[in-house]
Image (cartoon, rainbow, N blue to C red; front, side):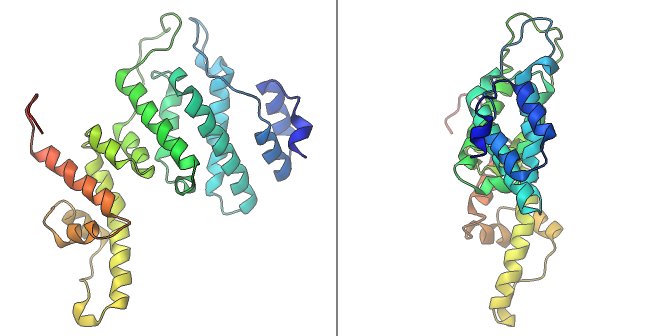
Length: 265
């Protein structure tokens, strides 16, 4: 019923005014359901990016979607709906993003944060599409200006941040396809606390004479740099860590074994 009250909202400015006047969670979610269509447009020469309503909308949804990590259920509900709107928008209009705009970096940073929504379907799948496409956009530095941009300055999106976002979305095959060597320390850092916790849990189940040695996360990270270590073998046998560990091993192989251009892999 709440959504129906806002069915006549047609512009972003009108919608944003209602949002700022509201103090109800129910109305906030209703407004998000009824948010007007947003299109990321090509920008003519002379029009600043901050003046484009679509970019303002994306920044708003990025900020609001972070509520999904709140400890307050009502705020999480608002954040979840904002996230749904965000990924739906970016999935449709990612190719109108400008690789020399700070907004692209902000989007990558958002997905590099370890949000709860990466465990939720189907919005995790939408995030996968968005992240891969944004990387392709950055990789080829695609220009979507109608005329020449006012500045030739290029915003460099952090490759480690891209890798972290891809890992959050579970896109390990894509990390291998793109040969992100930067993923090696990132995957080690991600895996070490998980492996430490799993070792502690297994120690509780085993007799003392068969227990694993007590290792801190730094030591586990160090051992993950050696494909022959028992920590690596342990991680490869675990359902939760297998794919990340496999990716880590293959990247270490690619780093140390340089394949000549044109050679058969």
